[in-house]
Image (cartoon, rainbow, N blue to C red; front, side, top):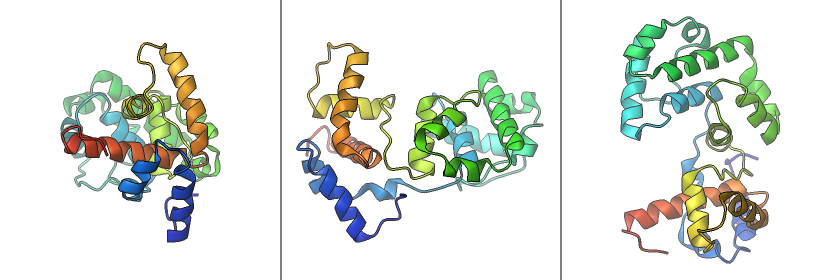
Length: 225
């Protein structure tokens, strides 16, 4: 199921998530978070993700703009990207001069080579289940599990992901469910996984509510809903 939901389907999702007493006030106060999802192709989404790793959003946008200029491209549209066949043969020095670290240069070229070697990857990935997509994407140099999970949620519209390596999700669950901050991270993730079972099959949507809640509390200066 993707996020192109009917009003009735949205009501069913909310009804399911409201069974969690902690999530209930978020569901009641916040709009359905579909506006956070803009389904798009995996290749350009992955490319932007890799270019933007470990830098601010503003810096990532500036670097990506310079990156596009290497190929004579311009535009703020998320779909703008050099073709894999072109990127795979790019001059590494030119990519480095655009602002990419040497590791990112190797990552974007490796990703382009993957899509050249798998010309039907976009279609194939969408036919796979979530774990199969993750296993496939992490085989690409520079793509970790978190990046793969973000692709599943934000590019492919998958509705039952629980990205506990995402700091915002991890911290939100810690705060909202009042988990023991002194516990081992491994044990905390196990506890989070167990409590999130109540969100199935809409764990991604629950996480989107957590993102929205975190954004709102920050906007309000830390006030809780």
